Structures are given as C-alpha cells and as structure tokens.
Length: 400
Ligand code: PMP
Image (cartoon, rainbow, N blue to C red):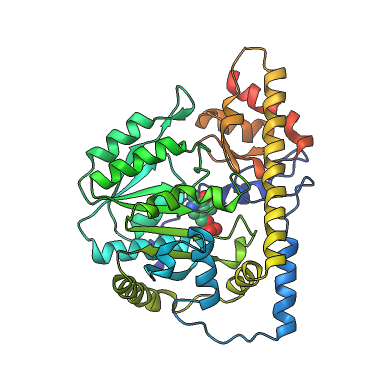
C-alpha cells in the first residue's frame, strides 16, 4: 500500500539548505533560507536569549503543560509589542491572542478559523509572496487568489495593480498583507500608500490579515515596523495578525509566535479565542513553553528589553551594511550601465535580484551560490567579505 506513495518534491526554500550542505566547494554561499548569520557566517544566539534562559534555570521553571491558548505572560507581551502597550483595544479586551507554533503555525491556525467560519470567503495574497502561504491555505482548504504587487519593470511596487485587484475581489475577502519587509521582494508600501490600502479594504468590507514575521528587523524599530498594523487597528477595523519570533529574537527552532484577532467587542474576542482553542486542541493540543518564556522574560524585564532592541538594531545594521557593499560592488564591477539602486531601496533580510530561474540556476551551478529560484537572496546569510564574489556571480548570471 505504501508502494503507491509518490516522492514529494523538495521544499523550494528549505530544500536549498539541503543542496547547500551536499556541496563541497569552499566558495559556497547559502543565501536561501532567511536566517541571520554573523559576519563569520555563523548562526547567532542573542545575548538576551541566553540571559532569559538563565533566568528560567534559576527560577527552576517546570515543564507542565501550558493551557491551549499558551503562556499568559507571553500572550500579553506579544499583543503589547504588536499594538503598543497603551493601545485602547488592549484595555478594552478586544484582542483574542493565542500562542502559535511560530509564524507558520499561527497562519495555519488562522487559516483553519477562516475555513470554519468563513467557508465562502477567499484570501487574497500578493504576487509574489512567501512560498509557504500558498501551501498553508491549500492545506487548510481556503481558496485564494493573487493581487498584483511586484512590478518587474521598476523592480518596485505595482501600487495601481494592487489597489485595483483588491477592489475587484468579492466584498468580505481576507487580504493577506506583510506587516513590514515584504518577503520575497523587500518592497513595502509607503505610509501614504498604506492609508489608501486601508481605505480600499474598508470600502470593500474586506478583512485584513497581517503576517508580521520581521517586527524590528526591517527598520530596527519595533514600533515603526508595527505601524502598518497599528494604522488599521486605529481605524477600528477587525483584523487578523500572525506573529513570529524566529527572526527578531533568533528563535527559529523554538517555534514561537502568536495569532491575534482584533474584534469589535470584548465579547466577540472571548468567543473567537474559544474557537481558536477548539481548533488548536485536536491539531497539537497546546504549544511549547520554552520560547514563550524567553519572549515573556525579555519583554517583561526593562533591562533585557532594551538590550534586545540594541541587538536587533545591530543585526538590522549588519544587513544594511552588506546591502550597501553589495550595491557598491555591483555598480563598480558591472560595465553594462545597469542601475542597481533597487537593492538599496529594498527593506529587510532579503533582496529580490530580478534574476530569473535560469539565471538563478547559473548562480548555483556555476558559482555555488544557493538561493530560491524566484531570484531572492538572503542578505542575512552574506558577509561583507563575500560581497565581491557575489557581485561577480550576479553580473555573470545576468549577462549570460
Ligand atoms: N511569514 C513570512 C513572510 C516569513 O518570511 C516567514 C519566515 N520565513 C514566516 C511567515 C514564518 O516563519 P516561522 O514559521 O519560522 O515563524
């Protein structure tokens, strides 16, 4: 019976790391997965994380099951971090927060909620988007379609296309938005554009669904990176937000995140939360405690909180300096006169190079640079000293 099972294709993002491991060339570079590396290209555990873990040992925290909705101190901290501690919706108890299995698990739980309570609604996702979004909605049996986002001609935002596709969708659709540092393009709407997006979503009675995987990692400021979400909340809209602590606290393997549903009343929030718990119980029962305690300890201690902000600024700063160096190397070395300034305008961990699939294959096969086939490279996996090599690889792949 198992003989009938066919081989699944490798994951377009995580499969890249597997191929990278198998490559024995010493110049190889893994720019596939979005994971922060030091200038020496080593994984990085934040100092505040180690301190928070020490606190846990000192206190002798136990390993009892968490409630289905997760650790109360984490849920409070995560909603406050997202919305701002003095946001009226928190005082009014209009936020249903449930701890999730990082960003992915939180998106998946929200998708299950949509499937159960809005069986006729569809989700609009940006074209392109993070590859796993489509998998998540497919597996949750939530229909989706794409709205225009990226304009290859300008290597920028196709704002008119985006607005007209959101307008054209059936009223009451869910609109998936990247809160900051759009993956894979690194292109975010301006604050004026966010206002217009909010106008259209309100006119159409759509429900915004924010994916916030990079809070603090885009600008270096937690508040600034949450401003898109806070704008929609301040307009009194109901919305979903999935959060992840993989990148901003470097907790990739701890699987810590949350789903927040901003509701119109505290009563509705209590009911929504009860239903999210009902969905979570048969899926994974209750979430893991370790990452939740780290976040709660870091956010709950003023000294650790401020140290976290400096470490985040440092990580965001390293990525910005690599971005700048890569741009300089490309501009100096490329004799074709191509304008590479789009690299400087992009935000966050990634750069969307505009390399097509064949060119991306050339990057890997000839230059041992591992990246996703949509032309995305993770600058978080690049060091200053490798920028020149990468620039050579990109120029060769572009022009051949
Ligand atoms: N959404 C986006 C847009 C992402 O880039 C990521 C991380 N690659 C995630 C969600 C979630 O990642 P995780 O499940 O590790 O939190």
